Length: 197
Image (cartoon, rainbow, N blue to C red; front, side):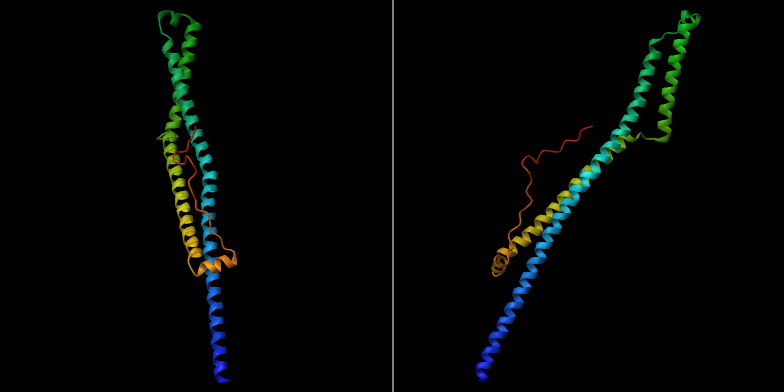
C-alpha cells in the first residue's frame, strides 16, 4: 500500500507540476499578447498625434506666411506706385497730380510702417522659423511613429516566436493564441509624404 500511495502521490505531484507549468505558460502568452496590443496602441497614439498636430502647425505656418506676404506685397505695390510718378514742375503745379503723388507717398509710408511694426514685433520674421519648426515637427512625428512601429514589431516577434516554440506551441494551440500580424510598410511608402501650402 505504501508503494501504491507513493506512486499515486508522484503522479499527482507530476500532474500538479504540469498544471502549474501550463498556467505559467498561459500567463506568459497572455503577457506577450498584451504587450503586442500595448505596442500597437502606441503606434495608433503616434498616428493620432500626427493627425492632430501637423495640420495645426501647417495652418500656423500658413498664417504667418500670409501675414508677412501681405506686408511685403503692400510695400512692393506702394513702391511701384511711387516709382511710376515723376515729380516734375507740372506735378508741383497741378493740385490733382500732386495729390496723387502725395497719396502714393502716403501709401508707401503706411506700407513701410506696417513692415516696421512687423519687424519690431518680430525681429526675425516668423515664417522661416515656423517653416523650420514644421520641418522639425514632421521629422519628429515620423521618427516617433517609426520607433513605435519598431517596438510593435519587436513585441510581435517575441510573441510569435513564443507561440511557435515547443512546448508553448501546444498551450497556444489549445488556448487559441494565434500569430499576430507584423507592421509592413504600404506599397509606395518609400515616397516622401507631400506637404502643401
